[in-house]
Image (cartoon, rainbow, N blue to C red; front, side, top):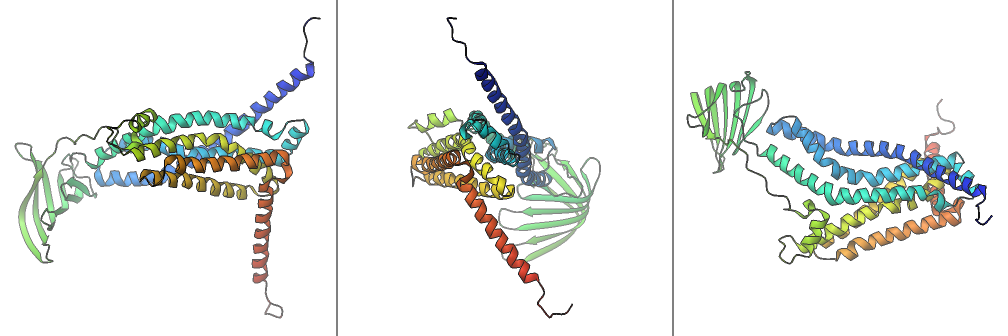
Length: 416
């Protein structure tokens, strides 16, 4: 035979390692999506409550809340993605360690870097997605959120009042009524508060009221019957007036003022727009803020392929400790790194530190830490630094438990 035929065991080994890669990747994606969903929902819930409160105070259709939340998803997804990716890898490696799968793979000749190849490949894919997310989806999402928020807060009043709700009619006028008819314009038990430009505050209550437009449709008329008006003057004095009928009027805006164009903030610019602004001498945006924003986005995206180098040794060490300790420790490390990058970005915004130093130095230190921990796990799989750290945490936790257990024991000779 002229050709060289590879031995069959080589094909079998190559096929087997590819199966292992697919297995690890499939097992990682399950907790990744689950963790991402849980963290994303948790981050959105608090903002969702505030948006409902905003809608109740200013009025507007329910779909406004849906649109606001949809524009917030890219922002919170960027926050949740690193944590969800790390947690999913940590859980899979820890489970494989507890089930002795890691020992079996290493006994078959697979090194720690070879086992982690699937995680690194997934991290590279998420890095590309993060560049799109941080560079393009988030800027448009931030602008869309600001535009809808402006529309809700500055929406033109439609001259109707929902029942048992406070309505901001604009220009310092707030209206409420306990009972309202189906049109929203016949009111009972009416409350009106007016904050005047001269510092006075007029509070008016009436038994009934009716909303109508002036003949030229330039003003809203609120006719009140059988009520009392209290005027609070800037010097503290009060003036009280009872009336049988009183008409209040205010300018009526039929349209909402348009929102500004996108680009009023560096956070609304895409990556290539940031690059253009940074090299444009006539840019109206501060050069320091533009540069810091560009470097911070790139650093956060490039950090994702480093997470497997941290999650794998931590997961390998967690088989002799509780997973909760590992997740808590990882949370501290990731939050510390996030705040270091954020601090460098803030210092770069005010020009006190170059973004190259303030952002990329923490990135370089984090990269070196991850690489060192991964190398130690490769050369000494059972003795990486996280194993000693978890043993210390176990010892400290056990000591505290024994201390509290002794304090709870009854003293000898005490009452039964």
